[in-house]
Every structure is written in C-alpha cells, then in structure tokens.
Length: 377
Image (cartoon, rainbow, N blue to C red):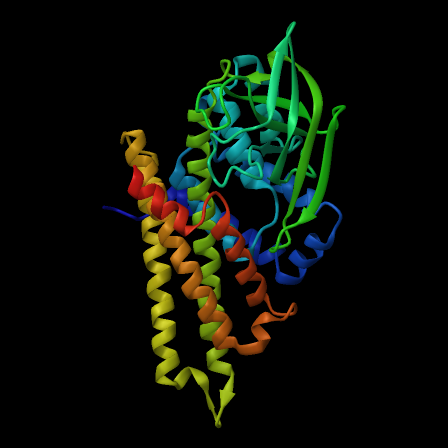
C-alpha cells in the first residue's frame, strides 16, 4: 500500500507548515486561548483566503475535493502547533452534515458562508447519558403547523459558544436509543430559548453546554428527511474521528521531537541524559508508537476514500482511534516523565501538548470504546 502523498497534498502540507512557523508560535497560541473567543478571527479569515476551509468539501459543493487523506494532511500539521481555530466543528462536522443532508437551497445558503469564513457552526449532538452513542438522543423536536419546537440539553458542544448557527440533533419519534426518528435542525445561535454556558476544556479550547427551551424554527430548517439523520451523522463523526486522530499524531510527533531535544541539553551527573541507554530505549519506543499511529491513520483515511462497505470503513476508523489512544498514553506519559517536573509547567509547551492529546483521546470515543466498537462490527 502506497502511503506517500501526492504533489497537491505535499503543497497543502507545506502551506500549513509555513503558516505555523511564521504566525503560530507557542506564546502566540497562549494569547489566542486567553482571549474571550478562544480563537483568532484574523487567522480564521486567513484560512479562508488560503483555501483551507474548502478541503473537507466535495468539488460539487465548491470544495477542494472532500478526500479524507487531504484532511489528515492538514490536521496532522494542525496538531503539531495545537491550533485552536474551530476547523473540525465548522467545516468537518457541520459542513459534512450540510453537504450530506442539506437541500440545494440550504447548501447554496450555508456552504459559501463557511468557505469564505463568515459563518462558524457547531453541532450539538452529545447528551449527558449518551456515552458516545450517537443514537442516544433525549432532546425532543415536535413538528406542528410547519414549525418545529425543540427542547433539551446538549453537552460538550465544540465551538458552541462562538457559533453563529447550531446544528441540533433532536428526536422526532421513537424511544431514547432508537436509530429511527432522529433529525438535525439548523438553529440561530442567539435564537429565543437558546441558552449557552461557555467553558474551556482541559486543553484550553472553548466548548459549551447548550439548553434549548421550546426553541421554534421553521420545518424547512430540518436537514434531510424526517427522522433519518443517524447514518449521515455517524459517517461524518467517523470522518471527524480520523481528522482528530491525525491531529493527535501531529501532537505526538511534536512531543517526541521536543523530548529528544530536551534529552540532549538536560544534564545529570555531568552528562546529557540523552546518552543514558535506558532513556534512549524509551524514546525509541515513543518513536515506534508515533509511526504505528501515523500509519494506521493514513490507512483508515484511504479506506474512507475507497469503495469499501460502511462496516469496513467504520472498523478502520475504530482501529485507528484505538491505536492512537494507546500511543497517546505511551508517548504522552513518557514525554512528561523524561522532562520531569518542568514538563507540567504552564511555561513549557510539552505540558500543553499533553493536555491536548488527552482531550483528543476522549473526543468521539476513547481507546476502550473504539476497541469494543471494532470487535462488535
């Protein structure tokens, strides 16, 4: 299997690398996180100008092509610098749902706004009792007289505090965990009845808990047919899972690189600790974990771009996320231990990288969940 990137993908990768080196140093990122919004509007507009926001979209939607491999090329570089801009929530998840389920009118209205950077979105799907089960939905949508009235509470909504519009997953019919009866509605972020409680995750990125109290929207704001959104939601979340897995791989490679560099300068007993054979073995194990994780993520992305069955694609995603989760634990902990106490300080980027990969580990299902999912498919 050929894991090499095409010329276009290499150019895309170099474009992100140049931006990171020039404009996204560690101190700059810290200032962005400390801001009220938790991201840089200037950077977001630059992403649009560079065409990065088009990457997850198909050509018929005005995008770069919608390839999963193209996506992971970008996300791996994002991970190395711990970019905080809401790329995954706006373009990969919400953009993917609009592309898959939206009518021609909905696509014509929303996708151009996403591509030019003027609209940010968030998908409110998770609930307190869902435990990674996308079909576990208690939020209700009652449709009467051409309008839908939506009530419920959503948790861990990525970019929920900044989004201009929300894609809310709600149940129109069936019991709590039935696959049928689930719909997605487009709601204005400041609509009557919408209450957003913003907070920062462990890695500093912004999220929100969202309460919907009889929020009324036209029935035309439903994405797709009545009660039939679950398959598209699962497919989009799987694609996002591969995206953040690549992001984790990038962050792990940064952890490895910074640990090796530190071992060459930190001295103990009059010599650099990098000369100690025991630490060399540990760093070699970190390198192996990074390579295994990167290889399985590329393979899973290629599987998503292939004509494989839905089950095979889902299995490849879970295999990748499970393997990446194990790498996060191994590489992250070794990096902190080799750095010692300084690795946990706010002043050093290693501690922030560790927090970032820890957050990525639990996003869309941790290693244990995806191992069980792989076995059940």
